[in-house]
Amino acid sequence: MLNGTRRLGALVIAAAVIASACTSASASPTAPAGATGATVNCQTGSITTSGSTALQPLIQDAATAYEGHCSGATITVNGGGSGTGLSQVSQGAVQIGESDVLASTKIATADANLLVDHVVCRQGWIVVTNLDVTGVTGLTTQQNIDIWSGTDTNWKQVGGPDLPIVLIFRPQSSGTRATFKRIVLGSATEATGGQTLTEDSNGAVTTAVTTTNGAVSVIGFSYYNDPANKPKLNGLQLDGTDATIANVGNGSYKLAADGNLYTKGTPSGLTAAFLAFMMGSEVQGTIIPKDSYGPVKQ
Amino acid sequence: MAQLTSVYRTAGLRARPGLLARIDLPRRIVFLAAASMVAIVALLLAFIAWQGIQLFVKDGVSVGTIVSPTWNPLADKGPQFGLLPFILGTIYVTAVALLISAPLSIGLALFLSEVAPNWAKAIVQPALEIFVGIPSVVWGWLGITVLVPFLADTFHGPVVVSLPIVGQVFSMPGFLTGFSWLAGSLVLSVMVLPTITSVSYDAFRAVPQELRTGSLALGTTRWQTIRHLLIPAALSGVLTAVVLGMTRAAGEALAVQMVIGNSPTLPASITQPVTTLTSQITLDMGNTVFGEPWQDALWTMSLVLLLISITSVVLVRVINKRRLAS
Image (cartoon, rainbow over all chains, first blue to last red; front, side, top):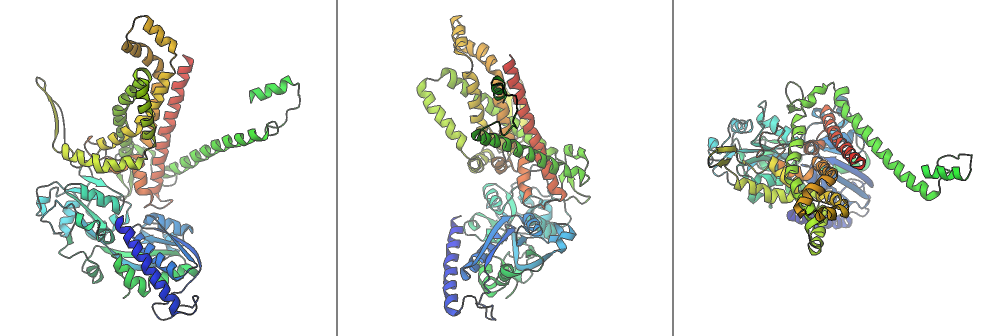
């Protein structure tokens, strides 16, 4: 929380600096988008986005930066979950819906076909444990399957201390869980019952992992790299690869997915300008790395 | 309304103007307020009922699935929407909360109404009012930071109760984590305590003072008066209080979700994670899409929850009618 405020503060300052640089650089604030990266296509009006909470920090920071450049633009960023984002953009209730998973896996094909996918970043997830799981620095895919399907129930079976494994799932409907199952667990059946808990957000998961002995879960990089959380968590390698943005970028760390922004049909006006801004050098080069996402454009 | 009609009759007015014309503006306003409240409730009931049956009507899931124990919307063989884990979880967590809370609350109400000197009332009553005002997220937060770690650390091993001659009478596995049915019930029991206390307090106060003095004049002790006079006389009011507490407990989502672990399986032991209707609805609603069977199943859960609370309202009314009749 403290960190969130600090980050926001830094961002406001950064945005202010950029805004003043922008005004002094271009004579007219309504100048059309140029070839140079620093120029922003300013459109006026207001748009609303909703969806994935995993993508929300990035969209929020990018929206604040855009509003800093363009005084007539208002971009309201809501969470709600990937399902909410896809429903609302399909209904036309919001202009942009964010999702961790592809629209075609969530909504009816006819509705999904009307949506246009804009991939603006890569996002990674990391397997984390309570700090009392000492001596375990990484798990292989097979070890993850054994743990999450309930075959292995004690950390000593994977080289750790003699401690029961407590699995902390996200709800089945969560994009994070769907991505973890698709990439790591495959067709294995996830364990249920006494040793499993379900928590519904990155924040709740982090709290549960730090307070529960022998707990293991999966959280987004942006939450793991938060200085308030990182010292309280034991982050694990996957198949011997460190969970870093660089390894997501070069493809060696596999627990990663595209961050999808959906619009209904081809976007125009402020929506199009904001999506273009998301692909510009400021967001791709500065905001995305700062928030622990991976750029899709160098 | 009956009064108004009789006024017209006494005045010898034969012409009966329309309902709205017969009442003046302030009455029209309050009538409108009452009517819109009824309309909102009716629309809400209709909407949730309509959404709640979509799982069976549109998605073709059989009604019997409500009592199936398997919840797995992503099963390979097709989604399974068994609601039994949630229904039982709600009932069990609520029941244990009431077992803990009802005796405490009724005792507290008796103390306030019959025993407490004025200065004690002056302390306890404001304290209860503050209790009512504490938001559920605060209870949940206390639960997750204090209660859950306490349960996990204190009762880690198996809990065994044994008596000298009989031997072991009871044993259950300890807490692997503190997230459990018991944690949910404990948090709920403090949350419903003020509700049950204040409603039963009113029930005890409603017993006429003459009955008390008459009883004491017969030479009974205070305890005998409480046991043989007050409790039977106020019983329907106390039952109303417990039913209201039950409704509150069954409908609570946030605080419970934070401490019960939300494991969508049948409740196995009071030391293990469980789930409830409210908790599953809040976990899944943001991540599912309007109109898909999965979200329809959440609507069905809402309908079940609504039926539980309608049943308890009806129960309260029946209890009160019997009290008025007797």
